[in-house]
Image 1 (tube, rainbow, N blue to C red):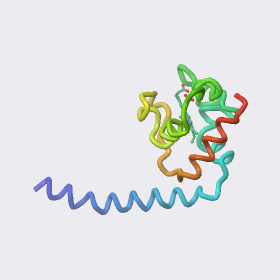
Image 2 (cartoon, rainbow, N blue to C red; image 1 turned 180 degrees about the vertical axis):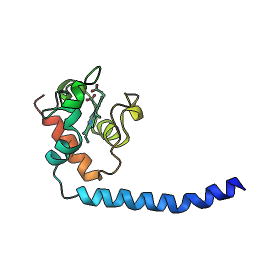
Image 3 (cartoon, rainbow, N blue to C red; image 1 turned 60 degrees about the vertical axis):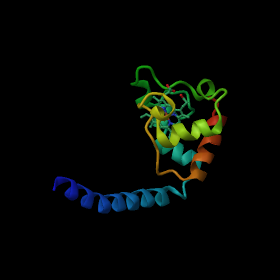
Length: 118
Ligand code: HEC
C-alpha cells in the first residue's frame, strides 16, 4: 500500500519541479554572464575570481583562484562543475550545482571566468 501511495505522489511532484526549474531559467535568461556571476558566484569566488568573496573567505580552504584552478581544464569539465556541482568531478560539495542555467548561459559564464584576471 505504501508503495502505491508513494509512486502516485511522485508524478505531480516531478511536474511541479520541472515548472519551477523552467520558470527559474527563463527568469535569468535575459541576464548576461557578468550579472549571473555577480549574483550566483561572486559571494564565494570573489568579484575577480580570486576566491575572496565574503562566503569564500569563510571557507576552509577558500576557493582556489580561477587563474590557477582552470589551468588545463576543458570547457566541458568546467560546464560539469557549474551545472552539476563539485562532487560531479570529484571536488567538494561546497561548490553547489546550478541546474537552472541554460547551455548558452553556462558557455558565457565559462568564457567570463576564463578571462577574469584573478
Ligand atoms: C557556496 C560557494 C560557491 C558558489 C556560490 C559557487 N562556487 Fe564554484 N566553487 C566553490 C568551491 C568551494 C569550489 C572548490 C574548488 C576550489 O577550491 O576552487 C568551487 C569550484 C568551482 C570550479 C572548479 C574550478 C575551481 O575554481 O576550483 C568552477 C569552474 C566554479 N566553481 C565555478 C563557479 C561558478 C561559475 C559559479 C556561479 C554560477 C560558482 N562556481 C558558484 C564554491 C562556490
